[in-house]
Length: 347
Image 1: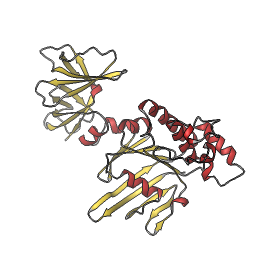
Image 2: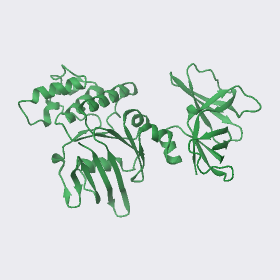
Image 3: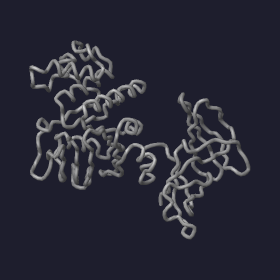
């Protein structure tokens, strides 16, 4: 078992500038967790402490029941059995692909077999004799992953490894990395600021805010049931509307909507709050006197779908609606709006 457990992790570089503030995180054995957060929230500091490059001021880091950092304990990086996939691969330019992968292997007898196994796993069988400069960016990242997995580490750390790739290649490499990690059963931690990357790649998403985990759960839970409006806006496009909730139903400027958790919203105790909707929860309809109406101010086409921006009567903020292709609304069109599905109410 290689469960990662972090408890009460604290780190300050200067007095009064605490970066990590008692951070807690558990990643089950064999899972891929994404640590997601804005720049300066402590993601890189967390990764460096886990790897052993930084000593925490307080707290513990345990992998598979083995304490790596804690009171009186600070194992050096080379004793932690942690593989690291850095940004842009960072391969040794003077070594072949095979020698890069085999760099951390001490068993000379099984080195060639293990190298071939890993190259086959990441889709680069037959590339062992090539040099790093002969590979594409995506292939270099696959080699970096194979190198990290070769010594059979207890934990793999991925430090924003897809940033240097173009958007078309990024999705393919992410899928390959995810498949390779699952095939080896490795426990992994992906550090990223890309919401789409975290949601589409990880088994578990941990949102970091001000040095703490603000919310941790499956991608579906974090996206559909954010703990507050800040998390809602950070992990995806969010429409936040003032609302009055009564008896499990909220009334907003875009109409009424059923709440997922109606507790506390009885007919006798109306609550004021903010309703969270996602752009895919709104539907364009024919404008009528009885439906909320808006005017199309922007159309962003992505091929498989489009984001339509509306200026809505009685609302001071634009409203984004995601619609599937084919896209028919045009700039200046007047349209009705209908809410579909359920919503979350935040106090």
